[in-house]
Image (cartoon, rainbow, N blue to C red; front, side):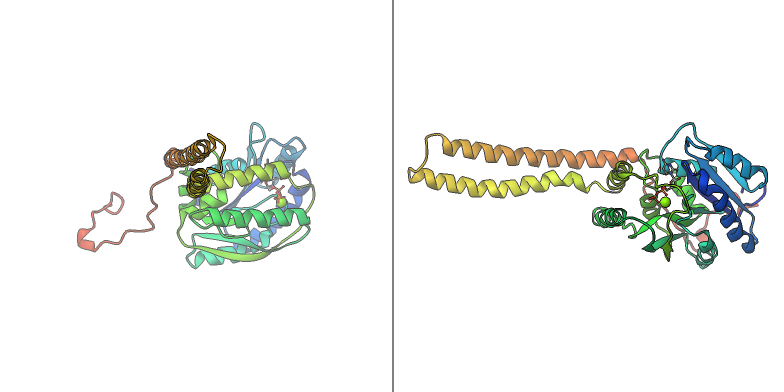
Length: 325
Ligand code: UDP
Ligand code: MG
């Protein structure tokens, strides 16, 4: 419930970076999607340090629509943090996350709300088809989703972006996760609860250019992998074990050559030293990696578990303060 005591049924959170060309159309399509649902809604527009007229356009729109909540960041913080800033200001009982560029159709809101009425706590939009994107973007995105799928412990559904509807309960858990490198979609999957998907066809950008050049995509991929997995740290252990096997073979070979007197003096001992030290070093790195991984998990400070509900027989139930009233 918001401070003024009015229940906001839905907050739509839209991070925007240099999106002046799309905001008016976004506002129009969103309004059209929200109106028939007859709910109390707010639209949280986040200006992520844009260098164009995004903020001025937002103020213009807000002048004639009291549903708009504007959040202006001090500088460009990047998509995931802009999104997090918007989420922190959302008052709604449900929150729709979408991009400003209308690649995610707001018209799906009704269907997403229905799935949530049926008990889902998170409804992901799953990209069935992506129109108007370059082969390059499609190929790198496909590679990215598949890599993430192999690396993470809690599965992140494939071809899911940030377009999703989440419940207040899931949002509160998300906001209570203090990690700095945020990969929101991975974090939402990690939360659990009942999550469902809604397939849709991704539209081309309404106007403007993508704000995700290769550099940012690589950074997002790195954040995604490191935020959701410590498996890469185990690489050294595996390399150490592989190297140990190889070094045993090499050692046997060089010893055999030595007994036959086929070697230069010193070669056998050198081979033995190099292969053994190599595998021991890798193995020790792997051991350190395991500890670093555990420290990383600890430092992330995520909740240990998230309880969906507790069922007790009525006799055992301890009356909670608000149940006692
Ligand atoms: N965005 C942002 N800050 C940034 C980069 C992007 O808020 O530093 C927003 C952008 O305005 C858009 C969303 O994040 O609403 C997704 O960006 P974009 O559509 O450019 O990514 P793509 O769909 O090409 O992957
Ligand atoms: Mg886009």
